[in-house]
Image 1 (cartoon, rainbow, N blue to C red):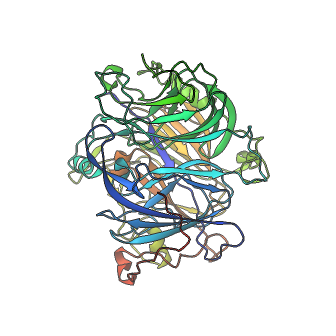
Image 2: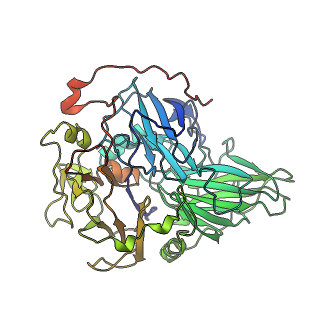
Image 3: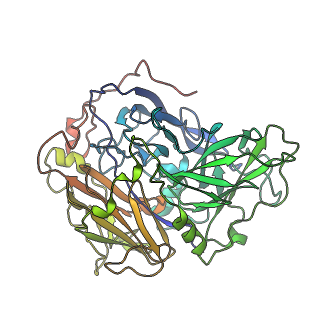
Length: 556
């Protein structure tokens, strides 16, 4: 089967506020009840994960420097962790929501996340990080607005629209998990959802009758900010709106130089926002399309998400053929050049009253190079696994950050190889070590099969180039390598992973442990008072079922 995805590597380099003293910045409270509901997004009843009874979950909408408090009640029948994709803050990995840093929230328990969205703007999303749960839902949008004193680099839009796209299976995450555990590929998805709904019936053969689809209502002449997130399992998607230009304004939490696109590739885990002006004739509605990339179109035609853009004065339903996607199944040049065309707007202020481009990456002295090589699945101890550099990550029973806090030995090894190993692949808890104030670290990912894009929040992508990596060169796209430059200026334990859920579940991740040899709260906040304990420290856990906070905001 042809590859359907771009390999996406995601570096979670975030620090979230955990101090009990919130100072003068506003506190915004949310209550999340995570549970199962029955839904039929593709016409087949199935179990999905809802937040506050909704699939997808509610959008968190806050402002730069707000202190965010999210009380999460786990009503699933398995452990849960929520992670905040791309929310990059300072001085604590305790709220990261991945197994290397946090103990999971047990079934029927709740836990309160507390963090500050400091010095950050843009479009992000949240999702459950364990057990392939994101394949069943539990995700939602996360907006961080500019403070009033910081202007946005475009006229204030007439509205804000959230669009979550992603491939979807009619099997729930537990069935998909069983398939992966048995060494099977997940196969072709059953469809693509837009905001948790199936496709509009643009084709009576491909789309059965009775499927609920998304309709987005707009007014003629107005300009809307449309935020698009690929929350799927492993399929890269091309996003487009029939007859409308997409003016890219922001990507991954940074304002971009504004450029028009008729369609744009959004890979798994990516988030972008566009300014779209409703300047077309309202004789009919218009298609909104998200279709699979780099695949055989005849085989994958049914794996297409279709929603409707409806003008308030529309005179009829959309009909006819969908707008064309790029015709480049065997040639990634279009997608690569499109990614190259995106430029950071260094003249625009972000979350602070100084230009985003004031940090000079060129002044970072590169002290270490890691070449991360992705290979096809391998068998280790009779199990199918995925690797980076020949290492398939084994999640510890005691999180790495918790083990450090209590000086436990033997939980992990600081021996992640800086280049691919030549021997047999291994399954280990092997991580990268770094020191605060080290000038910089370059991490390179080399792709030998279908291709990749390096997804890094707030870190500069150096270059794209087809071919193989050689030390001293800079970057590549599908079939080659991509280089990024990272300043190790944030103490904590940070997840480095593929965003493709199946590969992540099978071990394609590691952690970067950034430490300060001096014991001080100035570079990292202390462990939160409500920290959960598990593994070797499980006896320290006292059962405390936290009450609802009286001023929580509950989403209906």
